[in-house]
Figure 1 (tube, one colour):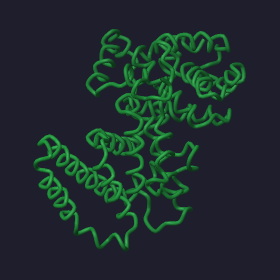
Figure 2 (cartoon, one colour; figure 1 turned 180 degrees about the vertical axis):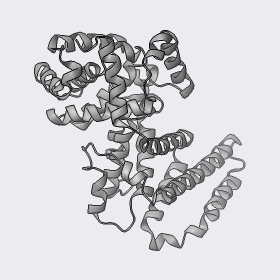
Figure 3 (cartoon, one colour; figure 1 turned 90 degrees about the horizontal axis):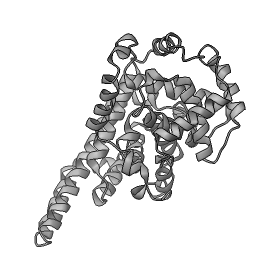
Length: 355
């Protein structure tokens, strides 16, 4: 069960459509409208950015692996689909989620040490909490998630296919940081991990500065196993051109995939026409062919698009995933850390959740 995403509880119980997720959150708000009006919070994306930053701060102090911090973020997302955030102390939830995730990812941390580090990070919001409170919160997390604690991550897919796609170290590192960033969105609750991984690879191929040295890419983070972000590259001057290239590659793959499926549905009688159609798509992109010799990145993107077209990958899901990530990077520029922190601390103190 743990090794098979398709039979996992993650796929069966923790993957939603955008409409379902919005309805779940709306029900939580409607259940206590007065509390929601009394303590307004930033948009969910900004809360996710803040939670990501706090988990990284605590995780780095304890030397936690990136997979452990990623799992903790998924636990927080799942927990807050069941519990209204204003009924909790988010810092206690963050601490507990990381503690539980470390146990599940086989990099356990001592509860007293973790609690001590958390209290030193957030002294004004956790001063009344000790290890016993983390233990109580752990029980609550496990209960709300129905003991469904196994999380399948996109990192495994990325590492499994990097050689097949001929990814350089810099491309793999950038794809890794894109995966890191997706935990600041709703994507872990919307799409399978392999969709996220392939989207991250595509964005890495189109956003990586061409002709640059490894030192230029170092700004995106420390590479595989690191906790860096791709925000700098994704909002840089070359980003619009890269996004357009990604959209073109996905459109090409969609068209070829649709033609291949139409040929199969026709019972193979129009197989020759189907091949001709696929060839036509290739010829439509033929104007790009001369660039393959001089632009290795473009050639690699086209090969990746062809691989997608020949596969059973849900390209519509990849399109949605790409749009969500690009939208997140644009939203990140409006993020205000001080405002988010103050809004959270306000309801924690007003409701006595810090004691």
